[in-house]
Length: 348
Image 1 (spheres, rainbow, N blue to C red):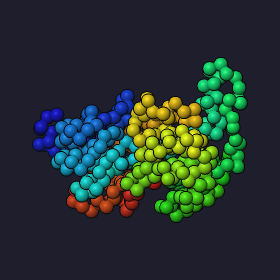
Image 2 (image 1 turned 30 degrees about the vertical axis):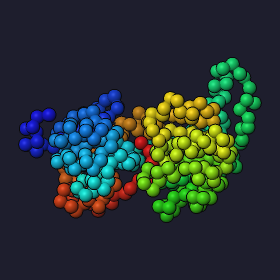
Image 3 (image 1 turned 135 degrees about the horizontal axis):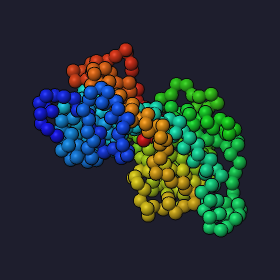
Image 4 (image 1 turned 90 degrees about the vertical axis):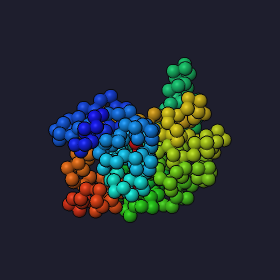
């Protein structure tokens, strides 16, 4: 990129490591605002340091934005995440420099909730196993026994923010008993019984995870947690792969101490083709797809670009996960008293 851009201090937005087929929604927003932007292939620290030194704003999908990256980009004013989770960004380092970190916490709420419910229903009815058997020429429901009636069973929701609450609302029509644990929630949705984490683990027939990945929640579902669950229970994760200790999950499934799992996210993505999880009839794995719909993706891309333009014009972003930066010299001024919030739901 020409060094003259830096000398003139024209605002520059870089779209980093995006795997979407096009950036038409972002381009429409930036062109209307007269903001220059480029796409760059960035996944590693070295990529960011080599290719982003002139950037005022980074729009990030993948890659670890570490303290070294944040301190090594002199013009950086804003970090915007394509999605909800910001666990790949060093929030402390960004806050130290007065750089707002922005996400889009509600762009795919319905999609993720639907995916979680779909995994619960598919596990309850053993649909993947029945499909494979039928395609293999075996026409018998009794190869999938036992299948239990979903009505009357208990679904536990770990994390009852935007997505967890939407899951509860959707499941209410299935006549299940709904439990939830969320230490950050003051009021729970109608029909949901708030319980302790230990009780949630012990009583859930289906446990669905809707937490962000933080130091506190990393491997929240470990061997000890799995040991508290019913051997007939199933685990569903559409939030963050790091919430679950994969080795402990495999061991519990292989030993019959857990009946099944529905996983849209895994600790390492993509999942290793040799993973035992892919050989188990009781496990459903999807490729981090819960967030996706055509409408949801277009909405996400437009809103990410709008946040960048908003900050470049001197306004406060709508969704800031480190709102303490406001009032510092390098951060935009607060607008309309809007408060930033940290997301309770974890997803892409």
